Image 1 (cartoon, helix red, strand yellow):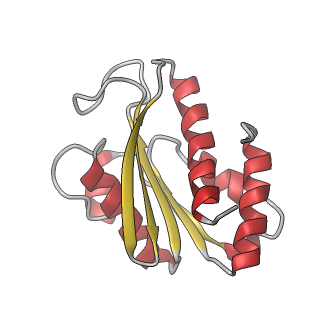
Image 2: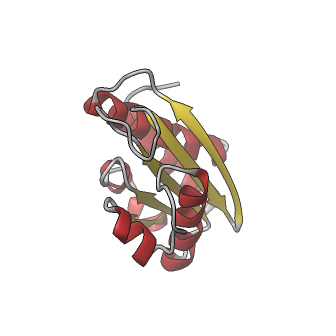
Image 3: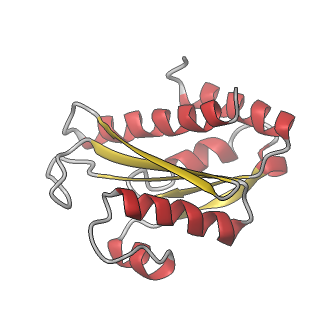
Amino acid sequence: MSQDPQELAKSVSEAASRDGRRLAIVESLTGGLVCSDLAASPGSSEWFRGGVVAYDRTTKHGALGVPDGPVVSEPAVRTMAEKAADLLGADLTLAVSGAGGPEPQDDQPPGTVWFAIDDKGSTEAWVEQFETDEPGEVLKNTRIRSLQAILDHLGG
């Protein structure tokens, strides 16, 4: 599997175009990097509905209806994905929130990242632990894993 975000985004574009899927992204940790990758890919205006960057916890709780409690958690990313799917009219939505480091967040060690994908109303979530507390590396790994997860979901 490619580790180049531009190549992954191009593959996502091909798969989304082939399947007629409408994609959206809701990001916290990555601050818009995944949206940027998708928007720069060929044909994105046909399938990319847009994204929400909800970096601050009050934005997650207020604008996206994330339940009270930690934002680096399964309930947070599930809610983020489901709300963004509704907001943006997407049938495949990825959400990501994590502890970028170098300090822990919500009692989670640096490199802990929660992902969720809402696919036509069915949401799955999972956690990954990247073995680094360097924020730039956590962001890079999260960006790549996000694009891979979308591509996997599209059967690409």
